[in-house]
Image (cartoon, rainbow, N blue to C red):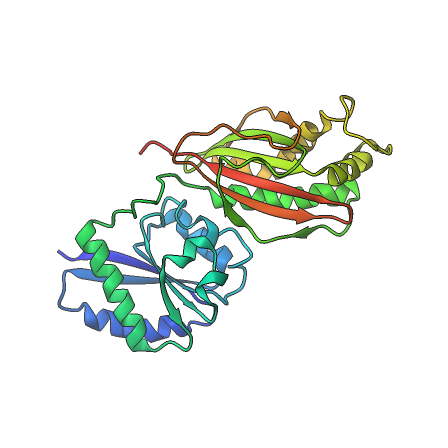
Length: 299
C-alpha cells in the first residue's frame, strides 16, 4: 500500500502547480509514495486549508497576495497541520529579507524550472518518509488557531474605528520570543483555549495611543495614565472579544477575564517551549500591539 503525502502549494495563478503536478506523479509512479497536491490562491486560503488537513510539504511563492503581511507564514511551525512539514520557498527576495520561519526552508530563486522544483520536492518527500515526518528539533509542539487570531484582528480594527480612532495601520506580523517584555506601557492579557490552540493574547498600548483610545472611549480628554483610567484597557479587551464573539464561539474558544498589566517591561509568564508572534499597529498619535503566545499542547 502506498503512503499518501500531501503537498500544499500557495500560488495565486496555478503556475507552480502546473509545473509540478504531472512530473511529480510520474516520478513517484513506481514508488511507495503517493503525492497529493492541494493549491491555495493566497495566504488566507492557505490558513483555512491547514485547519482541516495535514501537509507533509508546503510550497510557497512569496509574492502571492495576503501572505507575507498576514499571519500564515509566521506561524507555519505552530499550526498543528504544518508544524512537521518541509518548506520550499520560491522567491525573488534575499534570504535576509524573509521571515525567520522561511529562512531555514529550501529556497529557490525565480525564475524556477520544473527540474529544480521536482528535485526539491522529491528530496523533501523522501526525507519525510524516512524520518516519519518528524518535526525539526527546534520546532515546538504547539498549535495556533489562526481563525481566532484573524477574528481578533478584525474586531480590534472595527472597535477602534467605532471609538473614532483614526488612520489605523497594521504592520507586519513578526515572530517574537514569548518571554520578551511587552512593548507597551499598559496591557491587557487573556488566556485563550480552543481545540487546536492554547495560550495568551495581549493588547498592549504605548502611552500616547492609550490616552487617545481611552479619551474617545470615555468621551473625556485623558492626559495621564492613572488609577481612574487604567481599568479601561481591560474593558477595551472585553469589547473586542464581544465584537468577535459571533466568529470565535464557533471555534470552541474559551476566554478568561482580562488581566491588566501596568508599566513598561511587563512579561507574561509562560512555559518553556512556547512561541510568540507580535502584530504592531499605529494610529495618528501612537502605537499598540497584539501579542499572541502559543504554549505547548499535550498530544
